[in-house]
Image 1 (cartoon, one colour):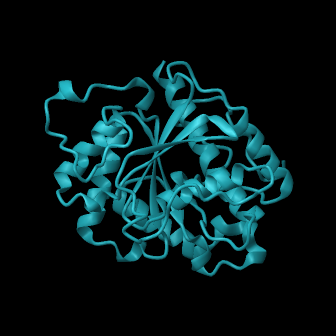
Image 2: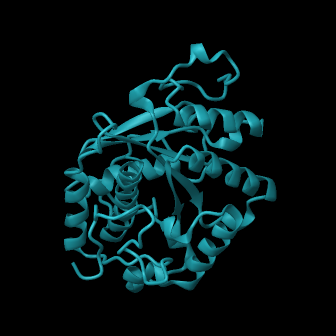
Length: 288
């Protein structure tokens, strides 16, 4: 498979991932038709580990406008064998399309995976309340379609008991690479606090950076996106601010032209998704 990794490899969660350089901070991947078929097949045929029921739940979490809902559309489109664009999840900054509820989306072409979309954490004005809500979502104690703007996490625990099929197994923090340098110090602190909550729950966490195409990476260098210095600098700064490892950070784009999604965007998003799935497996294996 050239530079493409071998998903679902054995080993501990702390072992060096073959998808990385020897330094462990640069992804290795090949952007071609063969790689795309390989990734789709792995995700389509994925079987969840024991204890996950019918599948694994991945929560997309981030600021308003970071691209959470658009990322779900990109994943749905990239998994489609014909690369046809799917826009079943409303997107944009229009008040009518802003996500307010906790919603789940089963992946039609990878039925063992379910994505969860939620309100931007900065729409909850109280930072303490936002962290409580995140903790309850991770535990599966927030019913689907709950309006999170009106949700009160301080009610008696007996009202919000664990729903086993809603328990979260992995979290993707979605960030906008084009505006990440403008995030305030308070927001960076909240980001760090929230990823710490996820880590304490022993839930795999990653960062998916949207709008890589706005960093000026030449199209001819698609296979070298992770070697591109401006992107490496973005991830290095984000790692410093949040404490998350650079190896858990990925670049994607949710923007394309026409009725089909191009090969580069397909491989990038499925590379990020497959990495999450494989590491969730490793977390379960380590916990056994």
